[in-house]
Every structure is written in structure tokens, then in C-alpha cells.
Length: 262
Ligand code: MG
Figure 1 (cartoon, helix red, strand yellow):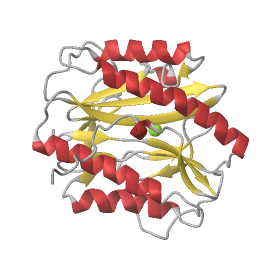
Figure 2 (tube, rainbow, N blue to C red; figure 1 turned 90 degrees about the horizontal axis):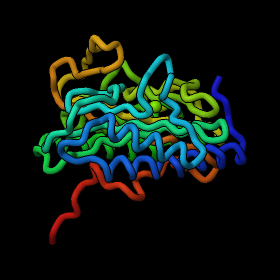
Figure 3 (cartoon, helix red, strand yellow; figure 1 turned 90 degrees about the vertical axis):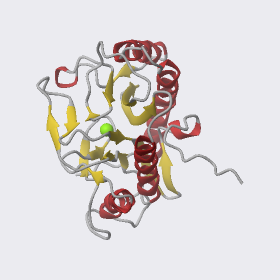
Figure 4 (cartoon, protein in one colour; figure 1 turned 30 degrees about the horizontal axis):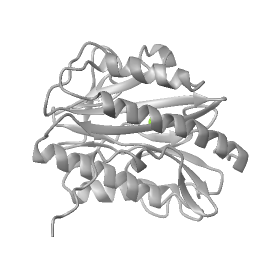
């Protein structure tokens, strides 16, 4: 069953989202050559707690980090640790914030200094796929419209959506129904209704769609070693259309296409 939230509950999730955006902006400010992913994790945790929140991921099924930090060919679920960022890396930062019992979840893949053209394209495509999917999160549409929007954007670019990992409903729990695949048929699946809140999260490999689980039992890599990116919003379906509750895009331009010079 998909739990629908009242307008007052959506405001509480938006409040968690405000802290989430601050946390993501802080993560961006820390990202540079030589910094460890644990240092970013610790700074983010401190910020979340200073706002009265809790990092949702910490302790989740024994996860030790406050963020997931996934560089290069790692798709998601990287454990923060001693890895030092290198110039030319890309780094997915996924943050969950629990505030007053409600969860906000979102991710951004950042460049570390100048990156290759293929990496830049991967970030742009994955971010655009998220925006295309967000646009579909409105009453009367079906979940398949959201999934299909991701797939269409990604496959038009010749890249691959990861099929074995999905987005999810979100609310008091980080993971609620429904599962939200990043591929699917338009017009299929549950009808979207006001009050549903969805964590939509395209996960994209520059190469093939297959992934592998690392020996730490958390980190997931592209199977072929190709670069991978991940962007995520928590989105409320409202009568007025999609409302992004983790609006990091208002302050972060990682993955945004450069404005053409005329
Ligand atoms: Mg998520």
C-alpha cells in the first residue's frame, strides 16, 4: 500500500528537506582533491545534528556512515572511509535526513575538479533523467510514466539504467512502497495521487547496465567498470503538480549542462 501524506505531513518532510539541502551544499563545499570521504561524512553528520536531525542511513541494517559516498565506477552505497578524492573523479553523495520523525532522501554526483567529456555527459544525462522523471510526478499519471521518463532520457544518450536497484516511496520510513524502477512502460503501474511522496533516483552506468556487489557487502559497482552516476530527489505528488522536497538543485549545479556561449 502506498501511504498518502497530509499537507501538514508534507510540510514536515519539506522541513527535513531544508536540512538535507544545507547538508548537500556543505558536502559540495568539502569536495576537493585529497579530501577523504570520511571527512565529508563527518562534516555532514555534524551539520544534520546541529539542526536537530539525524542521518537516516547511520545504523540502517548496520551501515556505518551518515552518507553514502560512491566514487567513479561505484554506483551507490559506498561506505565513507579513507579513500582520498582525486582530481577528475566523480563522487555520488547520497544523504538521508530524519527530522521530527520524517525522512528526506536525495543524492548528487559531483565532479572533483575538471572531468572527462564522458563523465560530464554522464552527469548531465543522469541529472536530466531525474528532472524528466520529476515532471511526471503529478496526479493522474502512473508510476510507469516516471520510470519510463528516466529510461527514455538515459537510453537516448546511449547509456544504461541500472535495473537491479530502484527508487522508493518515503515518509516516516526511508523505504516505503512503491518500488520505483528506472525503466518501465508509460501508462502502467499504480496511479499517482496527491499525498504520495516518491524518492526518485536514476542510477546510470556509462557502459552496460549490470552491477556487482563488492566484498564489503554494501558497495555496488558497475560490472564492466564504467563510470556510474546517481541523482535523487524526494518528490511530493500534489494537486498543483510535483513538489521537490529536497531542492538541492536550487543551490547546486553539478551535472547541469553549461549555458552555451552565443
Ligand atoms: Mg533513496
